[in-house]
Length: 251
Image (cartoon, rainbow, N blue to C red):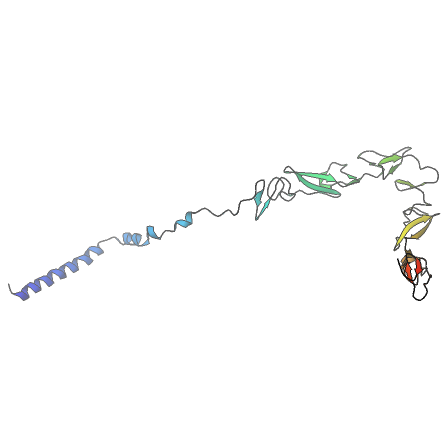
């Protein structure tokens, strides 16, 4: 056979092989092609997607995580016994958390006499209705309550008058001077007194009322050269005031 004939035969056979392959591909179902195209490759799956979420730094022993903080739920008034369990107190009361349970304690001088926790400690324990404790009423021959001892008082003794629930001497009591609720005002650098039912002030040591104006109290220091030991006592030129005494030099 001539050499050119062999070449033609080889080319023809190759062309037939090329024409068969496309025909075989078209015989495949279109849905199977799509399925194979959409299927994920095993080497493309990120195994990190199945890792657990980071829970953060563990809280110390005895504490629990509430949001972003670690708290002791046995003592926290905002998270008592569990997260967001808040202990609340009403009027004149103090809330606390003890062993994971809310507790409410009354402030000094007050009591929860009606047993209703929502309104706190509503009763004054220095009143005639609750003197020193809930339910102790001062009536009959003991109509008043002693605010300092929490005990019912008998009728006020001679020289005393009843002001509210107290027996006082209105001649000497700065809070009830001359009349109930007449409180003597405080003055600067002075002690407040009630003398014969009149408000008075007594200057503290080293201070004096040198301008004679009681409203501003004892405004002057008695350790200066112009007021040495007493108002208006002036030291001579060249002298100094030493412990209320004029001298050339302080020892």
